[in-house]
Image (tube, rainbow, N blue to C red; front, side, top):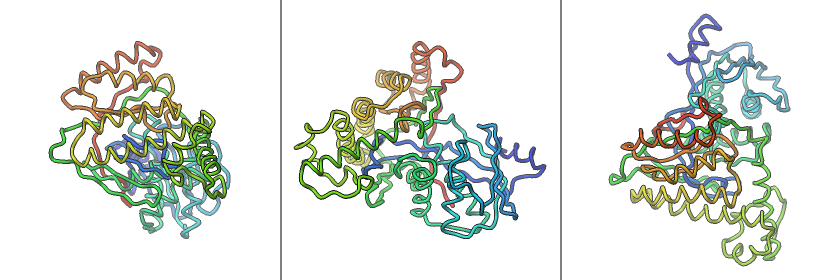
Length: 391
């Protein structure tokens, strides 16, 4: 029995009717590109968000989290139109989005549990999708995967106020165990590429920095605006037609146009665009490397992605930059990068299982030498790939 089920029983003096689950995700290559219609790679992992829940016939939603103190409550027909500034905003937004498309009559009582520390693994998307799964179940709804992704992205963009793309939600739905998701966010076409028989075994290791982060309060949105500004300017320089700023993206501007006019861009805009265009190429190369079972080449591209995120996208807290640097000098790590927005949170790595203990020892020791105050907060987790969420 999971801890959320035990807490549910303690609160309500009965067992939960069901357990919803959504996995976390990693993005080895393709970070900071989906909001400008790039290509991405991803995998779901065997850790994520569980919600133990039972239906409430009166339409009330009552939730508590093992990670946060405050209990949240609202009615399916009376959701606050504006964010309230607490952990439950994603779930209020999800209720609004679902209620705009389908009649909601039942609410639920639920207890939420995350199986890893918060930060960098798309926990916000995972809790949203897990909640969608529960709320759809009690109301007898089965939206298709593309609609579910669209609703979950709308929660982030419109209710919470984060200018994210669809990478997280797509990875957490479309991923399949032992396969690599290869997604084009322009038209949502995707492929799940099987692990080649010749590919060596690998772990997915998560190094949590011990520092949590909030996307809406970070510089995430500013970076997205800078990339969009580069696209807008490149269109103007080259004589391309352009419309609304919010609807402009780098995918509409060819690499050739970028190379011709990049030196006319402000330095920050040029760096954002440089990351986007080179990341696009890395994703395509990474998909082919995975297809042929070349984990060494795939890992190298993941490391290059991390370097570009630091130098061109200019993200990465001191903690995450240190972790990334340690990973690049540790035997047994094929590749990796910081995960998520990159301001705080964690790093992910694809690693050789034979080096599991030595990697843990070396990375832990080297990191805590630099940040001794984070002892007890820094943690290492060994994961495997997993199937995405299923309604």
